[in-house]
Image (cartoon, rainbow, N blue to C red):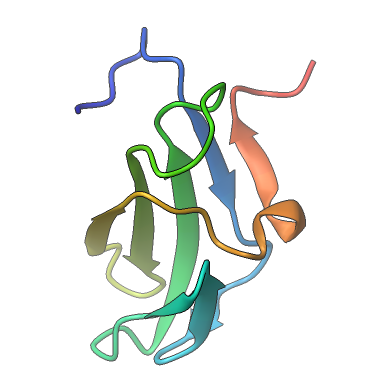
Length: 92
């Protein structure tokens, strides 16, 4: 499922960069910041924010130096969702 401006998605961001290998726990498993990115920004995309979980979402890592991205499709939210900042849609 692709994301367009008309898609009802939500985007979240970590408040600071994370080091390579940092672990993001998610419903019985862990997702790590890519080792090839010494420091990365972490974004979480919820592609169906009104639905219950086990739906399409994505973990996005952006290299803090090069801007290179790695997108990991998934179907579960991170355990730290409540500590991420909502970046889209903008808060009114």
